[in-house]
Structures are given as C-alpha cells and as structure tokens.
Amino acid sequence: MKVFFVSGVDTDVGKTFVAHHLVEKLQSRSIKAIAIKPIETGIAFNASDRLIHLKSAQKILPNLRLEDINLYSFESPCAPYVADLQGMICLDNLYKQIEGFRGKVDVLIIEGAGGLFVPIYKDFFMVSLAMELQERFESMSLIVCDDKLGMINRFLSAKFILDSLKLRFIFFINIRDQQNFEKINLPFMRHFDFETQFDSLIEKML
Image 1 (cartoon, one colour):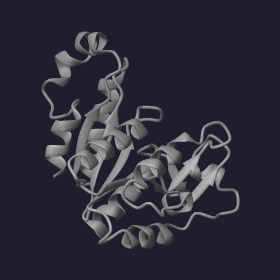
Image 2 (cartoon, one colour):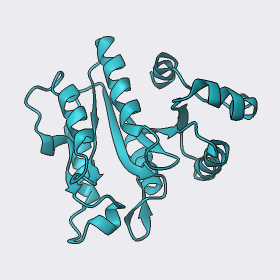
Image 3 (cartoon, one colour):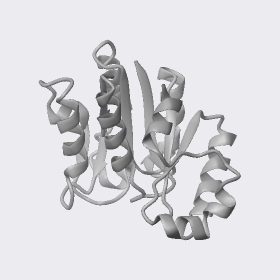
Image 4 (cartoon, one colour):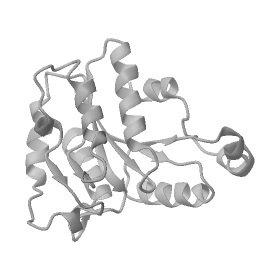
C-alpha cells in the first residue's frame, strides 16, 4: 500500500479538489485508491470534504462509514488545536486507521487540514504529521499550491521547509486562472519541478 499525505502552502488552495481527482484518476486505471480526511474543522459551515471522499471510497469499499475516513470533526472553522476543546485528537488512532487499510487498498491518500504549519497540538503541526507518516509508512507528501499573486513566495517558503526537513514531496500547482498564472508566476516557476496535470502527477506517484 502506497501512502500519500496531501497538504498545502496555505488554506483554501484546493487540497480536497486535488485529492479527490487523484482518487478518481487512479480508480479509472483499476487501482484501488481512496482518500481520507482524518481531521476536519468548520463542518458547521461546510461538511462536503469528507463526504466527497466517502462517496469515492465506497466505490472500492462499499461498507465504509463516515467515521472510517474522518476520525475527528469540529464545527469551528479554525486550526485543529484551537477547535479541539476537549483534547480528543489522538494520532495513534490515525496510525491504526492507516494500518487497517493495508491489504484493502493500493493507494491511500490522507488529506491534511489547512497548510503545513497548522497546529494539531501546541508543538505538533501538519508538517510534523507529514514527517511522522514518512517515518512510519514511507509516505510521500503532495503539496498543493495556489496560483494567486504571492504564490512564488508561498511556494519557495514551503519548499525551503520541506527540503530542510528532508521530506519527500511533489508540488502540484492548482491553476484556476491559466492566463494570470502564465503572466505573473510562470516566468519564475518554470525553473522548478512541479505538476499541473493529474496524469503527470500520477506517473510520479506510481
């Protein structure tokens, strides 16, 4: 089982969009792939992320329940550390959950919450989880970057962090405005390795 952790250079950059479409593409190749969203906040305003992943996952494992792919959910749209008022989050449960999918799926995509430095605990962040997943499951991180003004700074900041921590990663640029991206970002970004096409990204994953 190959494990991938999807995080982003910031919130609202398209992590769910990327994770979902990767699953759809992989399933279309007869690869048993599912995505899970272990921690989700802001469900009082939008609970669609985990439901999108559940619907796709049930194509492979029809008996999956929502709690099988979403261990912890919180109403407030904020960092897990802030939302988890009762101290419910236990990452050992997540690691057991991942192990439970071994032998059942070929590819497991784990979507994080927010960006790399969103805190899960006081001194443990999404990037800390990426490191732990790489250590335990030999995972690779898929880092989603937006195409808005300022993305070069967000891209380079994330790349510096990931390189410093010796994480294995692939960058995916979620292009929502192709013309604008080519005008303000591509002249610099063409010097770096990144993907904008799902098929090319899948080839690197596999």
